[in-house]
Amino acid sequence: MRGRIYKISSNEYTVKSDSGEIFVCAAKGALKIKGDGLSVGDLVELGKEGVITEVLPRKNRFNRPNVSNADLILVVISPLPEPDFYLVDKVLVNAAFQGVQAVIAVNKTDIGDALTGIVESQFGKAGVKILSFSAVSGEGKEKLEETIKGKLTVLAGQSAAGKTSVVKALFGIDLKTGDVSRKTGRGKHTTTCSEIFEKDGFMIVDTPGFAAIDAAVPPQNLPSLYPEYAQYAGECRFRGCRHITEPDCKIKELVEAGELSCERYERYKKIYSQLFEKRRDYEKD
Ligand SMILES: Nc1nc2c(ncn2[C@@H]2O[C@H](COP(=O)(O)OP(=O)(O)OP(=O)(O)O)[C@@H](O)[C@H]2O)c(=O)[nH]1
Ligand SMILES: [Mg+2]
Ligand SMILES: [Zn+2]
Image (cartoon, rainbow, N blue to C red; front, side):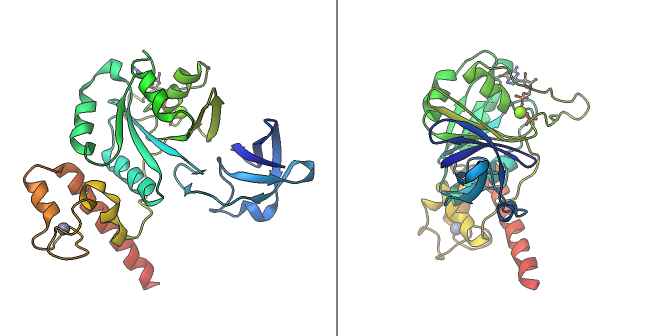
């Protein structure tokens, strides 16, 4: 029998079978290898007595949040807590590397609408859809529904951006949500494990918020993972231009001319140098 993992808590795997039954299962020891164990979204084979015996090949797999077989990554940000665009960039890079579509969802429009404009100015050419809505007032809900219907949608982003609130708003169910800490201005990590919620053709993975994430790609791939840079490949003087120190670089020209976001470009350089350093460390071993 086959099914999909909907939730993992310690050693209990909640699996929904193809026929729609819910099982709480254990997993064969070899499938629980640290770092490469099972994740929510995995398609699995169930043996006798409800033990997971095999993982079917994955379309994709993300570490943070730890989810497999995503069709869409919905990066949720909001005016409060203050959005971390560096984190957004890295989520987009990881999604692009695995060929998964990403959408930036600007939540909490009821407390201010300035953020959408900022996001559009920095990510408008980044090949992602930008949506704005309010999980509390319901504004923008139809557009969001249209975008995610029929796709295994993974919510990703900082704690307290409103990921769980999105699930509540779409499904009309009650789930635990948390406040922004008055002391630190950050979220309190209310959601502690990933879980798939499903209803009427919607399938959403609520996930724990995170404050840091690594871009998990080889540095030489980075330029091709920025669609607004990749479209000019060939217009830089050097083939394989990294758009950093090379002369006659089209991307640098466009950034200087204000055609491409300077903020996103500065963060690009930072991500590149981090990936490069990491690779050097790795090669030293
Ligand atoms: N004003 C307003 N507040 C919102 C909105 N959406 C969520 N919130 C509030 O933001 C806070 C955090 O919401 P959560 O849904 O718990 O955030 P989360 O992203 O799931 O956080 P973690 O589970 O910690 O990762 C709660 O106090 C929500 O009520 C919104 O659209 N407008
Ligand atoms: Mg949550
Ligand atoms: Zn260049």
